[in-house]
Image (cartoon, rainbow, N blue to C red; front, side):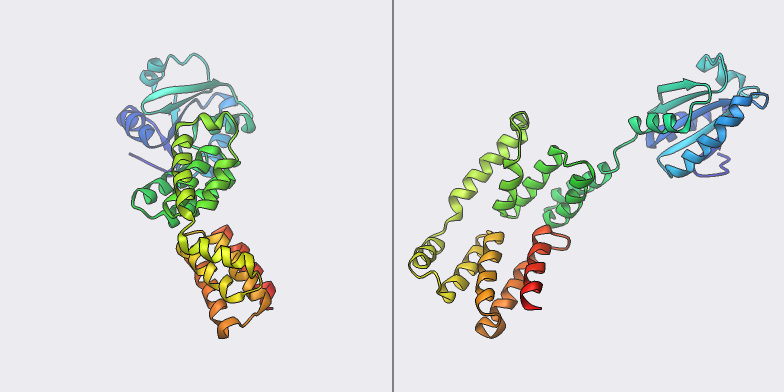
Length: 288
């Protein structure tokens, strides 16, 4: 196929089938029917070329000279120029005639293109399938923000948190559900898992330490041990808050061991984790 650009191609009968079948199965194809004598075509083509470059790789502008490719024109029943047909998976899914403004064409294209966060979600799902839940969460957090906190993505995040036994983080996401969102089948499954994990979260060691602290709330040794037990039970935020309270009383507790323990817990959360960033700031503010 003759390609002046990876995003723009002149269509003839020789490459028409490839454009319609192969290219449109990979990305949107814009069939631009034009002619040299058509003034609106000359106004529209630069706009389409600009968008083809801007949406780099997401769309292919396939230019069809109506005077030279009359068989293709007849196949599509083109009656006026310019006409633009939008093709996906070998089928026209939209079309317009005349030189529409750039803003209208852009809006039309975005209705048919994947949302900018969808690729990240697909990659996160693949990572989760490989049990790489920390890595999946990095992508899901970004997609959650960019999508305007789409609840389906929030459910995927909650699923990852539960696999990592980060019960509190999962609980925050699930408790934000509206009544309508609570009808989602995945929500019910995740809530069942959450409730079981919450019931199992209070180990005998944690309960014993909490009881002793209730009688002796200023005992740093008890607080330090409780932090470690909470961490081992994957109750990370409670663990970090508890050990932070120890360091607020004694920045060098156990000759720096408490500070190292807190840093180790933060590091275990992985790069880009909001909880890690929150307690890194708290620790930095406390120490410096």
